[in-house]
Length: 315
Image 1 (cartoon, helix red, strand yellow):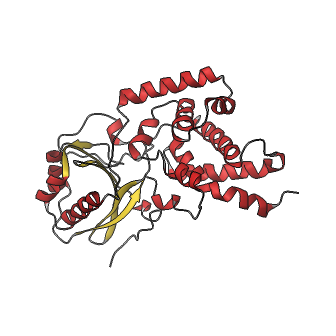
Image 2: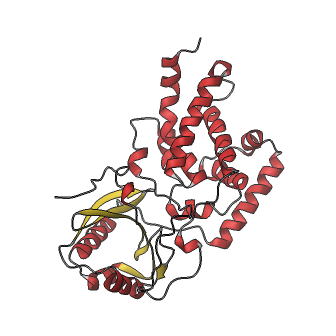
């Protein structure tokens, strides 16, 4: 008979890193949480056959990866507006929300902030979850995606990956090479400055203050000249700080005091909950470089606020 307490004690430390792994594969927090539950159910059913020939972590990742590959057979890739076409040029000609598209979702850092003291578990959960990377990985076929994540993020050996997906080591190396070539063509590698750097924290404080004061002049100086701003589920996106400020002033106009910005974090990046007149409106995820704010993804979905531990309204 399976000891449920033993099973829970041995598998619980890996839940958060498995959530991160499934999110990398699927680009959806909702789907990732479902797949972690499915992974644990499959593990429970086969726990009596687990003989410890592999580590518990390896065994669970094997189950989770196969579950993700099965799920991806029946789903479309998750997207951001920048992956759909060129930049928009008229902020007054925005279309309505494209709710039929499978949009990429942000991953709240709070979901990965567990109590595990295992350094390997903490690293595995936090590595490779940058929004730009996850978005780029969605362009890879599922098996290429799995191989790249297992090899480059989780640092599995080629032989381990080959055993998992049932191919030769040479085939794994070939699959990984094709995945790298695809990502290279899309320019997926991005150098970002860690948000806990004191200068970056100062920049973020000035960014929030500028929004709350409707200070477009300061906001312009904080955005890189070639910054990008996108707003899923709207398909339009804007390139360049001048175009972004034009969008804010003409299509999203507000006055000083209308907006509140609450600090949070997503995908290992700084983020803000954006409130207008005290009502939750969007989650902004920022990419910061040494020279300013490079990319803002403003998720126009206030249902996300609960997962970030943020209130829907402010007094």
